[in-house]
View 1: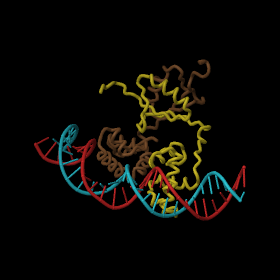
View 2: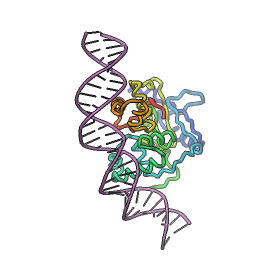
View 3: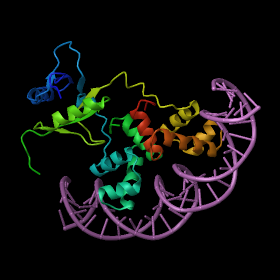
View 4: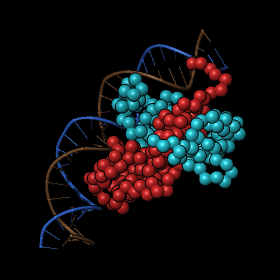
Length: 123
Length: 123
DNA sequence: CCCTGTCCTGGCCACCCGGCCAGTTTCGCA
DNA sequence: TGCGAAACTGGCCGGGTGGCCAGGACAGGG
């Protein structure tokens, strides 16, 4: 393989948080094969991070509910979720019920759609 | 759990080009202080690269399938979809079956998630 | 003309889902 | 120390879901 082809990946940064932007710039600056884009330069990919303060969209979901929600978004059935998390199907259904209630959804499909719309999960 | 002064930065990848995604994953995997997000995990930042040439990844869906898909994304049951479209529940299930097949999904929730990921529908 | 694709409908059936009831433990907070 | 929240488990059951079978109507292209 020839290394002279396109060894460098150009990355652009669109980070609201200055501290995060700085840390990322420092970390990525050491990586061979990576380069940060200059002003106006076209990049192969862009690192984006919205300011957390702009997204106060926190529906109060517990950690376990987030686990279940993530697996639901993967299309997993209650049985699969139970197996993956090492808990019983009943417990999964319990968490799903809480999710439906908190997300104001009528079913698991609706719950995933609502969560994605509100930015709780990333599809 | 060890509590370091500088916590890991969780990065998510949204790269259309598999080759680019792979190179980035390999490069970033070796960086101290960086970690790639798992499925559905909230990330501090997201690396985005949308390849316009790959976006026309039009899965050949018929108009009726798009109708059903849109209502599925609203969380509607087969019965509701049937009533809304003025067709029978059996026909809805037929279209849902085609959707599951074309979208390579295991269920209606997975189908909606896949469709949203591929940009077929907008949540 | 026939053949293909889309759309539509019906029945049957195993399984899954969501809601209801009940209980346990652990943990943090007032 | 009591009390609530979170996590977990069980049974039960009506209705929803998805896979399978079958069929018909209708338009467009070889």
